[in-house]
Length: 412
Image (tube, rainbow, N blue to C red; front, side, top):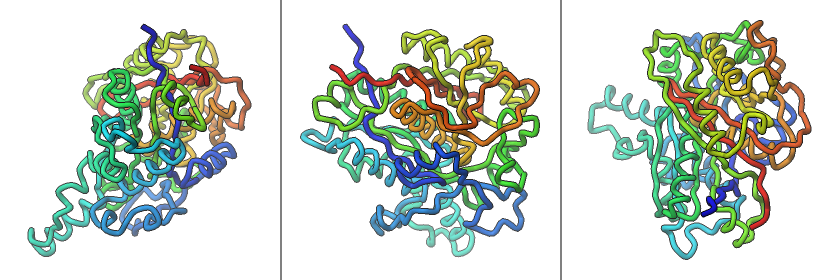
């Protein structure tokens, strides 16, 4: 029996360089950076000042006031992106059968800004001051629930919490749900809103945030001066469905096929140095799942942690998979910041757009470290005959994930 082909037929992107898929793609292909000094709160006591904030969006235009009162900014951004993806796809949700549509998202930090506000009420005024929505607004599954409610989706719904790998894991689970026949379409992906006083304080304790004040120098993966990542908010949501179904219903666009997926875990103490072995295995398993060889991969969207040990581990993983072959490597997250689970989903969206348009988007020029001199970083918009693209992601604690996208064939 021939395996069903699962394709991306709708994309919604909410980012610091564009709050819609069209504006994001236009900006990313031009190499526009959305990084700057964080403006949403006073940074006086914070050593970290650079971030990627979503500015050009009025949440009130997309989210009803009563829903906004119940939700964190992270969920609100997810509602906007999900609505865009469904509109882009032309998928009628819930359609004839609400059980045909599923919602599977990922979350790294949940609704921390909402939670901070309610905890402040607790300590200031006592437990009676804490609002009823605190019980759900902070929770990792809040975005999944709100998207499902808004669009009447009653198929299998869930959330994955594998930190920055989560955006890929959600897509992998969505593909599995579709192949099992448990739904006919899945709204999947991730958004994050980790730029708030408490959230930033927590991330600083993790020791991986860049403390460089210059937005153009703060986030430099694979460089000799790599000093950590820059936090970003936003992400992407996708509509994934069977190719035949998409064609039968007259989908306007088929961006890419989700051809392969795999995940591994490095399971090491935080004091142990990362090796890249688990990431390489995830990539190899994803290629096998897609039925292709390393030489079939035309580009890689890298994780780009921007710490020396993790960068060197990723370089080691790429060399394990591709040998000495200089595969083009894209790092679009250096333009918007690291959105954790949202970054992985946005990388998939960007890779799908790259396949659809036949272009690899640029990243800022990075002075590569001596151990990364053979890395083919894409610094200028590059026209390319793309067939397969590999997307990599890693989550804090040892999570690794890989997704292979294939250029979609518009035939049944």
